[in-house]
Image (cartoon, rainbow, N blue to C red; front, side, top):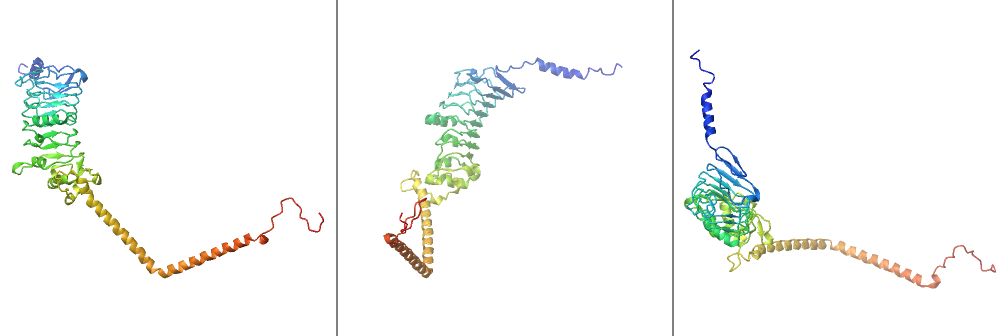
Length: 383
């Protein structure tokens, strides 16, 4: 009996582990945020307009942070590393944070060094914010950033914001995915085409009329390496002579443009809604002195309209020839038909003439009918 293990013997290690876990202090979840997982794998903060700056009490072991629907307006330097306006060497408070989502937060200004102190950040989403100003060093503290989304965020900034974006993207050497959809861009920032490891560039829903030779060359990689995938659907492409470089590039790299079959012409009017890949490159001729394709509407529409008119004229000539042949082969019948028609018309006119003479002679006019109710009398009746 003394050597039999007691019933509580196997439970002792488990109780020790539970006690150790309970004794370990856990960092509290920020006010009005939701924390999921242990350690803090995901934090979601959606407090509406009450949150005007990033929460400062985010647990240090957080991996993913999402703030949606706040009113952040301005992201100042080191906003996630200790406070507003801290220098670039601010202390690291979130060393493990890998994903940061800041959509629909009414962010208008992102200052230099706004993301300093996030050395592990690999994915940043600033989509659906009305950005007006972006510091040239806004992303300087993100050496590990691989994915950046700026969809529907740059439309209000104008050309100055586009230039600032070009400077801000320059230091992102590890960037793999870049989202610029829905920003009314008329051209792509040069820095968006240069990251050496870029795998996908999303440029859908913009105002791109096409891509020039310099932009297409920037999409190629030295040493025969495959360039990034490019999404171009829902852009108002101008299918004139200026589209020749893009058309030639697409036919040689169709696999790098997954939505190539969805590319449609928006101008000139004669090419409206035609698939870009169906165009004949040989017909896209530029007028003399029009190297940029500003007058391609006449160049593109002219040959097609000329061919249409020639075809229409040939059809009319063929119909006229057939009609003349029918007339020639039936000339005797037509003459007989014309003679019969002339005689019928003459007989008809003679009948009208005879009746006219009869009606004009008063002696041959018929007696008027007696009124109703009157009695007929003879001449010798004396009445």
